[in-house]
Image 1 (cartoon, one colour):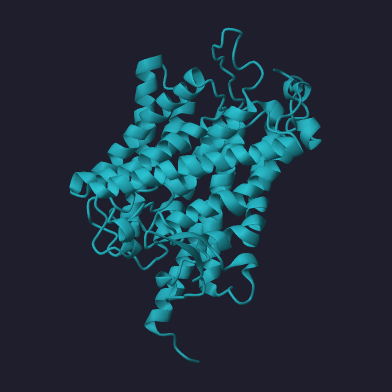
Image 2 (tube, rainbow, N blue to C red):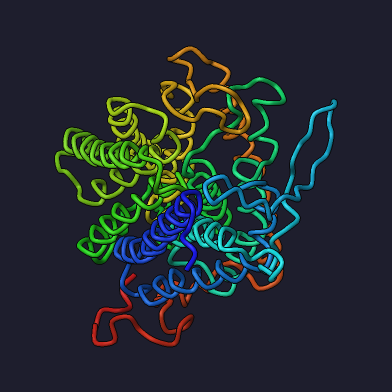
Length: 456
């Protein structure tokens, strides 16, 4: 028996760590399903659970066929996994003598020529991240989204919308090259996905909810928003804790290296930001409305988690608490603005939790990164440093990454929904919406023995 070398043991450990964290992120799907279903009405519970179930399968197959290749096909050597350089073909254009990577060109269908152990581990981990983004809109468009339209839009997210932007940040694309091309810090940096995952899902949610229109009864004849309570608060809070648990895989796993002891700092920052987000949200609604509404506790915790996802590896513990605390208040202000000013009906607040707080997380990295981590990231010497620690160019790179997401993902979402509306229609009929979507859309009731299943 040939004993493995030290480098082989390191690579094997890193692959095992990455897979384990991917499994944790996959379990977050259960958290999203419980959270979204609990915050919506029982007459639509079977349809919502089915969306959260089926989006996983759509994501896996669409990402396997096309998405992974577009995203990671040109990423280059995987240093954590022994330097595997199987994925090294990026489609690049030259502008002003500078290379602009646009999308990968290897890894489609994971053929035998590309499916090494390193590539397999990367695929699984990146797939569950993409699936998180694809899941987010199911809550924002809930209770009036036609199931077939959901299937088509989710496939578009898995194959094109998410992978292309993710390539620009994580796959060696042009946003990651802003540092080497224009000396803007280390380029747009996003450790675990505040912009790549959450802002993408938030933008799709906001644009989709706007184009779909509000639920019947959400606004009165004067345009004033009316409360439509969820049917199961314990379910929603349980889902939130499942998400918080899985988030340790989300953030700490993004080291892609169990041999990197920095995972402990990442995990602690993640925990602190989530606690600060929930606590600041509780205080804010308690003071403003007189009661600490548990639904805002849940969204406050998620806001802290979303905002921590980009900067968690680059900031200290006090900054993590501050970032989470700001997010806990920001999510409430944003949700009120979306509902009352923009007149966009988002039943679970997804566009604020993932959109507004995704922006805050990406920008906070450009402010609070303390120069303790990230040496050589995106081929830039030195560690990632934000504006408050001497490098304002990093904040500019963060702003450019956010603006690009808003424009690209927003336009792609609008185009996709326009096309699906022409093909199959995006919104259910008025009769089905009022009576509940479980029977007309799914053929079964979530609560078949409930006499009040058809409440408005």
